[in-house]
Length: 148
Image (cartoon, rainbow, N blue to C red; front, side, top):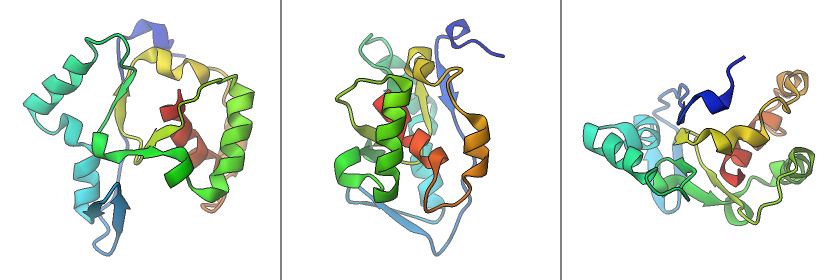
């Protein structure tokens, strides 16, 4: 198992398909088709953007960086069916934070300390059986990354 302390930064990327008919609206921005994936990756899309992203970590208060246009407020933008999971998981993980924001699309770079709340605490068996998109522990955890 990889120990988070072995790294300075952790990059979370995952696949996103293009859906020509799919249009996602976040913070008054419209992301349709391939624009969604490009928007998620914008913070790393050019050498300049990558340099600016890494420069953010010169501030010790910065824990996570992604496309700033995709930061959402949990109370305002949270998915109603995940609110119960989020409250339960915050307690389970021992996260006592007033921060209730999440990065829509969950592609980001962060300090390993951000992920310490999840290290060796996630019930993978439960996550694997929660495939119903309407009640998703996996989506709950994606939202919890921002709270961390």
